Image (cartoon, rainbow, N blue to C red; front, side, top):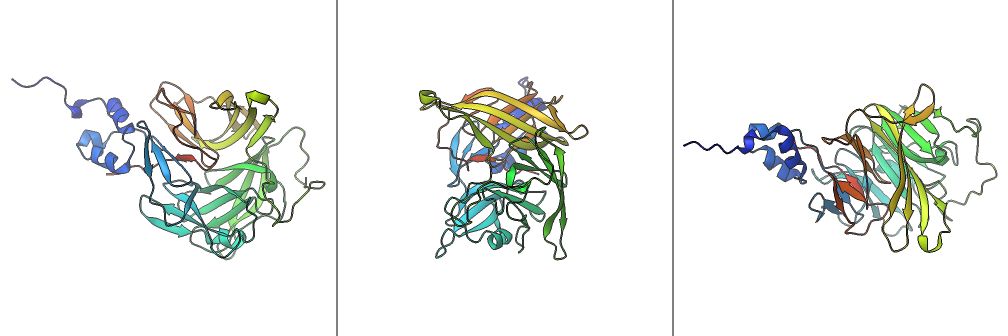
Length: 370
């Protein structure tokens, strides 16, 4: 008698997609999709990893701890995209000097960010690169933001010399707290929730440049585009950094035993729109942080205002200081947000198992193509 039990190849694609979503490592995903034709065409979405500064990373849903094969003595700086990671290495013999590179742990390729090394020459021990993003591929424009007023935004190309930086303490660059690409254009936001569009070009030697800026959304009380930094204390380059506003601001620093409350803003692209996630969180002493309020707004560039984002499709927003990403997802919830150190994957809550700092971020392994 023939068996009437269902075969794995007969399972609905949505069930197979849920199984594939729980296969976090690229090699295992390749073996899964090599099993049969129906498995190969499974459209399941990828669960990201959380990568730490030392190269260790957490996979979901098993919360397994693994280690990336980073080049010798390099530390993780942040995620870029398409599987590329930004790394930094301390240069011996030069005080506070560092070298920077993009590294793909899935292919083993490494490309130096020579433009950064030519610009960031003399810094203090407090200097920090905050974000590194590629516009599309590793051959395209790379944007870097730092905590220093002298080069808050840097444009360069991986593996090629030369970089563009604004004039010292030039507005609006000196107040940008987060950046994101939407298509070919670069956008930035300030802590006043102003949205600025950068017109990108290149010089005669092929180096990327900013040819102009446009305020897409203005704060009602802000001045004109000619506003400057007059009246603000500007430190010498070698005395300190941390002068560019962070994307996290303390709302109340004096809550005693209750800890403190902070607001943060994150910019990310979604289906041709530019989203801003506004988050207020509480951080009690000796207790996990918790969300007080989360808002997802969309930039309406026709009226020059932020409006509530109302997506008709299910999507998941993965948020961290170093990298943010929006992906479609097979879930009944329209929009779900996940933060590093505080997350809930597919309605399964996970307590933080490891130390997190500002460099711990989401990393999406490359999709397996067979």
